[in-house]
Image (cartoon, rainbow over all chains, first blue to last red; front, side, top):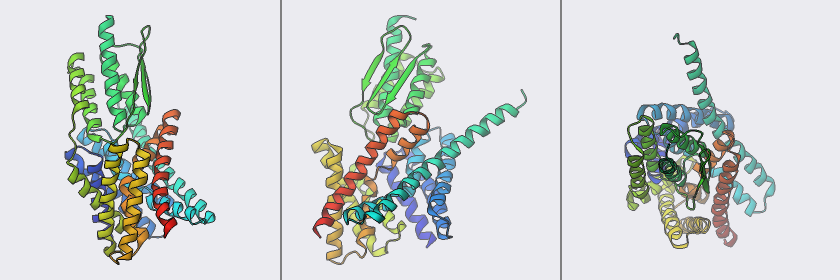
Length: 147
Length: 248
């Protein structure tokens, strides 16, 4: 089952790389970043962790891998970020929320909408966290390095 | 520094910013790039202010410049190209004229993937999402077909009507109709999973994350307006699907 998730998330992230017209030599890396982020989320959620922290950890890994790839290939980090977080975006839940609204089931609809907001915030926190960690490491390194 | 040269430096900065904004870069990165270019060319005290719909750029004691951003899309290749050029400028490897020429080349280039490949990518991504969200393997095919049809409809109607909101609405309407048909003729099993997978190529994931990142970087105006854009898109998709549900 995990194997199927690995393959499909790779294809999905790579497909989004093509849709967003990512540079050709970065497509496979985009797919890999998306795959690792999703698999962390999937395993954590499968082990019973709440999906919000699971999303945060997934997007943290996406951000770290994107940062490394951006350094390695000298491209803007957004190229890897964007296709990488796509599997984590709560599109399915947003759809469910919308459907409940249409069915006049406002109680569940509002609940689901709140969850969607939390998940979107979680993705952003994960992305920001690694950026902050990166800055901290860089600054500490510059500070510690003997001149 | 002569007046004409500072004007052409401003031109380079504005063009770089415009290309980046039109193709979906984060606002804070746009401003950062413009300021870097200005500093590299020796322009002191340059200030730039970018929002999703316009950029302002001014240097001390001179006229400020303005560019309108009217259409926005996602083209990561162009962002990477501009980034590459700005790196070269910072390394003092380009002069103002060469930089302007290169940027104009980027603006008019259309190095995109062929349309059929984009369709295939949308189809594969849609099918994959259906599996990832817990759909069955038999739902993969209808979801892939609906996803490709929805993506094609979105591109086509956006060219035709030039209103993104309507294009997204029609695209998600078509997706929902196809999902209903797939269930009716027993090609698919779970309608929800088919629709969720197929609408994913339309979902504004890039806008949502860019919005939150801009907000956290202190660009409140850009963050809020990008967030509103994302909400509008989500609403269009939801409404398109909802119309179909209202009739079944």
